[in-house]
Image 1 (cartoon, rainbow, N blue to C red):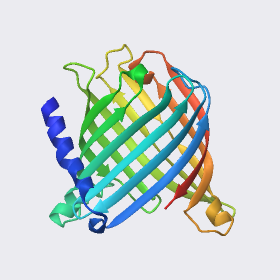
Image 2 (cartoon, rainbow, N blue to C red):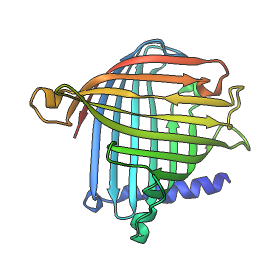
Image 3 (tube, rainbow, N blue to C red):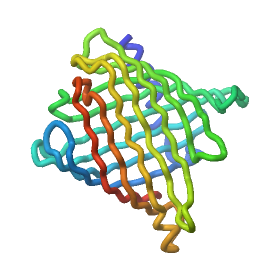
Image 4 (cartoon, one colour):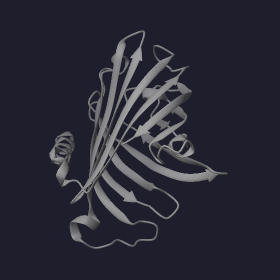
Length: 247
């Protein structure tokens, strides 16, 4: 099973090697966040996050990298990379199954140098359901098998809704965006079920100041982690101030 995860991941992630001219579209942003009351190690942390996504002939790719300055261990780096193969794009047809607009095969890898989590590495493979509609910039649900390198002969299941919902209050434009990972199994610890949710509320100050809409946002991210790292009863609840630039 582990070899299957590796084969799927290597095959699908090779898509990222496509040169930029092959992409139908690209989206990038850089985020700066600061928050307190983190569990495990330094409670106060500044994070720089770089996100990239693109669409190409048969699907799309997405990755992000978090770089955190910590007083206890120095620089912490965490990254997730995903590739998707779209049924609609490959077949040239259009799925219409209630709210489902497309189904994609997904593969991903999660990496970290966190010493308290034993230099974490995990693999994911599964399906992604495009639920986009007129109310959301994007809305999808990923369902994937999950395998961590440090857990022998155990596999978990992860459900991840991802969304971006634009709204307005008076003349101000906002986005409510984020994700939530619901994961069960695949842990050496006693917290067999864990949740990581990171919703954001962002004010479009680029539009508000007349610079350019959808370029600069300020706001907050609420990070909630139930059974962090699979450790039972470790609850993390952090409100972070953030600024994000999109390009």
